[in-house]
Amino acid sequence: MAGTGKAIEIEGHNVQLLPAANEELLTGKPRRQHVFVIGSKGIPARYGGFETFVENLTGYRSAEEIQYHVARMAEDDLRFEYNGAVCFDIKVPYIGPARAVVCDLIALERSIRYCQTHPEVKKPVFYVLACRIGPFIAKYRKEIHALGGVLYVNPDGHEWKRAKWSPAVRRYWKYSEGLMVKSADLLICDSKNIERYIQRTYRKYAPKTKYIAYGSRISMPSGEAAEAALAEWLAEHDLAPKEYYLVVGRFVPENNFEIMIREFMRSDSKKNFAIITTTDGRFYKKLLERLDFEKDPRIRFVGTVYDQELLAMIRKNAYAYFHGHEVGGTNPSLLEALGATDLNLLLDVGFNREVAEDAALYWTKQDGNLAEMIHRADGMTEEEISAFGAKAKDRIRRSFNWENVTASYEALFLKSFL
Image (cartoon, rainbow, N blue to C red; front, side, top):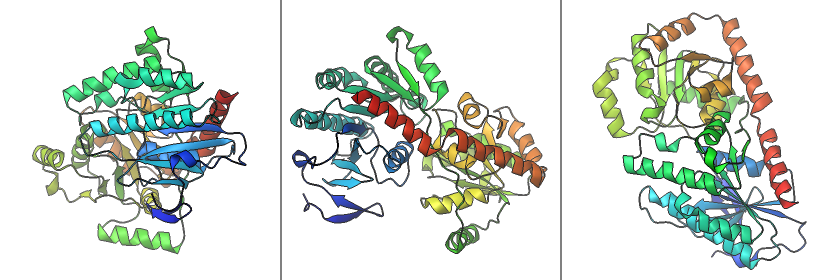
């Protein structure tokens, strides 16, 4: 273990190393509600929905009496302070999809043992993100309750529907989800559609649920550095401001890249289609065989962008944004698009309508539907597009800002301490 107090850099952030886990510095601190967050890859975060959530949950913290502890999947064996949270590494070998399950179990085990050896920790909250560890959760629930603590679970979205998983893994996800719902003291849903799904599907467990939105911000970076970074990126990919449609997301079937590419190729748009994604070679080859999109010069696979300020500028300067996600709850990339891009064209599913309401246009999977919408979008006036942009920013401002999201969580966590 590195020396206490030493500053190191992780993911571009300076963090302060802490003593070993059994030497927590509690002396002189105010009465604390300890919250153990398990299930993200940890913070500092570069990307990822749960990682961004934890980054902002801790970063916007206003209740000084809350002490967050965040498990972090890592190759190191560090314990450090970041955003006022105690972050601790979990080293897990690369064992395929089971790696995240093992990481969550080790993190939960260590967190419970920490509370057992620190009698000053009263009524701890264990907040587990996603439903990976259902077959094992009953044992830990008993131990948490023995501490006077509570088990909260974020059920995430319909992970068991994702095409990337084998049939066996998908069956495990669904089975595990049911057991997590059964054991949780409270399920915190970031989507009203997911909350309704939990209540309807698992009625026999009489689950207690609470809706707290995912958060976002209105992204309006400016200045010479931001403009220069954008100009360099546009030049690299032969694009021009407001002359490209955009999509940002994981390159997986359930995000409907095939429909978006096919319909764009079918459209008569004179603009380009920029696709920011991590390209899966097998899926890319399948789509290429079906669509032969490389013959259409408007289709541009432009790689990944992890610089969040640059990504916000790219979104801001897009003519319109496509969103084809249909699995899961509130999707962070949709919120980010609403906070930056004026015109958003969304797949017509409940999750997306719940978020955007009347601040976007909606398309279906029916042949020709999206192509026709692209034709309509190309013909819209600046005033019409600006009106959609104003509505989109208002949605973020009113319903999805991180300050309100964090305040809701803090009120819940502190209520658990009373």
